[in-house]
Image (cartoon, rainbow, N blue to C red; front, side):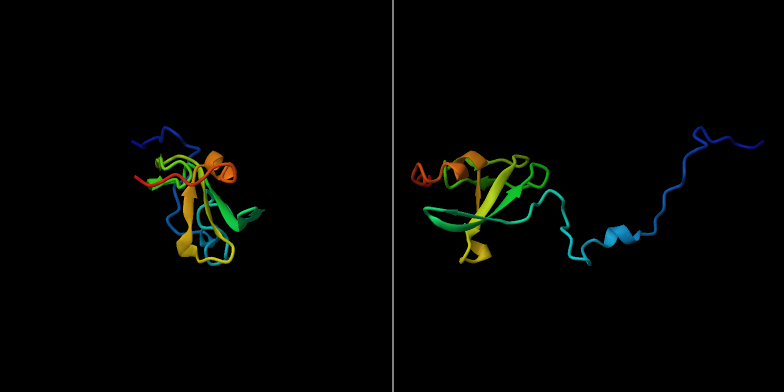
Length: 109
């Protein structure tokens, strides 16, 4: 007796990678949750700022603006001086980053 598939319109999955999966080779961003750097200028100088989506935020960071933790899954920004090194990146809550000129950096605990 012939077995009838409950979903005859289904197509079996393909295990072979497609050309679209090679986006890293073409220089496209690996994770769509990671934005591109934007250059911002203010009274405190030139900054490179990268927005991080909640989906891409997988670690806990401490915001230098309010000294509170940025929990995994919380959208935020990463900022560093335009003439600085990438190692100097700091993770900020978006409101803390936007109001950094109005207040001082909070002390660390």
